[in-house]
Image (tube, rainbow, N blue to C red):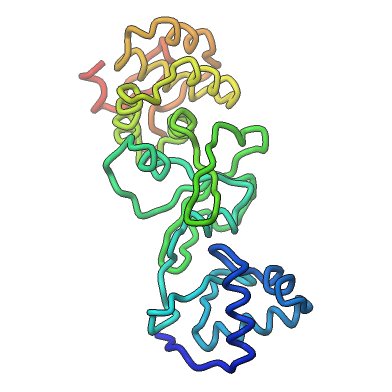
Length: 268
């Protein structure tokens, strides 16, 4: 545990100025611009203040402030979404985190799902005790998001419809196909339901597996949506996929070119 040490008057003034001018995080460039010093000098200052416990290092060159009431700099991230936006931009918060934000699930997930155009080596980093799940998307797939404010910082989160499509593209983002199906049911019952937008987004996403899973789930849970089901069927690509790639599949639903697990067969 790193305890806080005293700093001199000049350092305190500089640090106070940085705190006033930054929102959520502090980078070397931020400090250099605010204090009108060189980047190497700013980096040395930030490193010194981190060693004294007044700020906390998140990644190389990126820091967060330590609350005044804290006796240690070993503090958890105050808002992981802000850190995600700073580290992985262009990106947005998606998956179960977005579903929770839009009240589509009551489940609480500790891992933050981030969809980014970056290609990080570590797809499951743990930063200050917070776990992140990173998925790389193309720049053209960077659509269907909404800006939300986290304190004084604006970050992007997938809108309800894009949230569903991302989980259909990769059920892991919803915690597996069962939780994803539950979230989909909540979506169908919510004021955010927009079936035409689901189809439009699916076309833009251009992922054949999405139409197979979406058509299957619509047929099961919203059979009255005949037009959307027909659109899904007309958009089927060749080849068979699993309803959930992480689960064994026992039966092929040929009309959707979809392998489904044993647990889903009786319901079909």
